[in-house]
Each structure stands twice: as structure tokens, then as C-alpha cells.
Image (cartoon, rainbow, N blue to C red; front, side):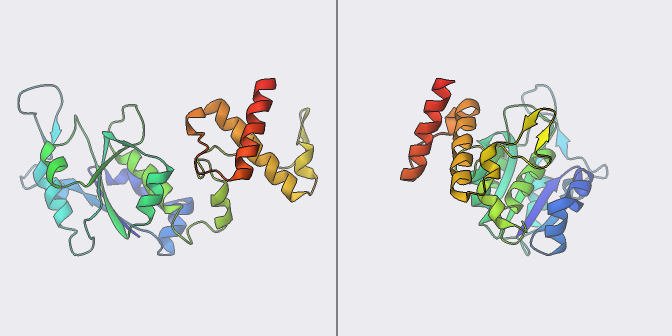
Length: 246
């Protein structure tokens, strides 16, 4: 998969893109991340990429010319069918969107800055707008990194043990179950006996029930019976009953 990132601060990406899963995915050629400095496409001698908003108001606005030119410079290497603007006005990012993006051959991520971008960028250039949460950041660089990692994890071959993807939080609209490792006892806290039983079916049922309980407690908005298998619905009802009894 090819991901082109348009940014005014390409140095933001250098460390994360070389590290851990993303670094290995790039080395193996599974993910090709290309950084495009928007400032390189400014035409004046000072390489200005922002200007005051028409009508007045605080802050500056990202100009359309360098952004359009930066995107158009990619037409030989990117389909330009998936141009995503990182913006607080975008739809909230989630695992479903990550899965949809992971199915694409390429995409362009445009990192917003300042008070926003010229509206003509939205109207004539981008195909989607995404937000990673209801809070204020200085720009779209961190959101772009979030999207790159979430999407890259879903590309076949990026995660060595792909079976672990099935237990990721939000994979089935629920949070993950509690996890334990050695030592068996630590400061008076012990590992639940079921995890030491060797009974794989019992362990699987326990994990599913605990995942439902955790989701009901922390993110009840995620819990929907639609799409669940009959056995999962039974476990969900057990989780609800246990929580009511506590």
C-alpha cells in the first residue's frame, strides 16, 4: 500500500515511521509511506503557505495553491482516489474506517494546520475528512500517524502473528479481555484459575464474557446484539447478569 502524506512538518514523522511495526512494514515493502512537504510547492520566494482569512478573524488559513500542486505532483504514482483531510470537522475515526482504508491500494493524507484550510481544498480536492477525536491539536500530523499505524496493522503480512488481530479491541465492536502473564502471583494479586486450567473452550468463554463485561462498563455504546452469533448473545446476557449482581 502506498500512503502519501502532505505536511508542513515532515520531521514529525521521522522517528515513528522508522520504529517498531511501521518500520518493519516499510522495510519489507508492505507499506510505502512518502512524505510531501507542502512548502516545497509554494511559488513565492518566502515559500508562504498560509494567509489571513477573507472577512477577517483570528489565525491564518492554509492556502489552496500549494496543496493542489502537491497533490497533483503525485498523479503518476498515486491514483488520487482516496484523498483524506485530517480535520476536527471530519467523521470520527474508528476500526471500521481503518479496515476500509486498508483495502485501498493507496491514499493521500492531508495534514491541516492553522485555523483550517481554504474551503476550495475541501470542495474540489479531498474525498474524505477524518477526525481522531473531539479535542484540539495544532495540526494533522499526529492524527495522520494514528491512521497510518491503524491501517498498516490490517495489511496482510504486517503483523507477524495475524491471529492476534482477532482479539484486538474494537475488532468485533467490543473491548479486549483482561490479559495476564508471569508471575502467577504478584503483590497478593493472582491470575484467575481459569487461565491456568488448560481448558481452551473454558478460557475462550471466560475471555469473551470478561470482554463483554468490560465493554458494558466502559463503552456500552459499542454493545449491539445485531451481528452477534447465538453463543455470543448467551455470553453477553451472562455478562449483564453478573454485572447486575455485583
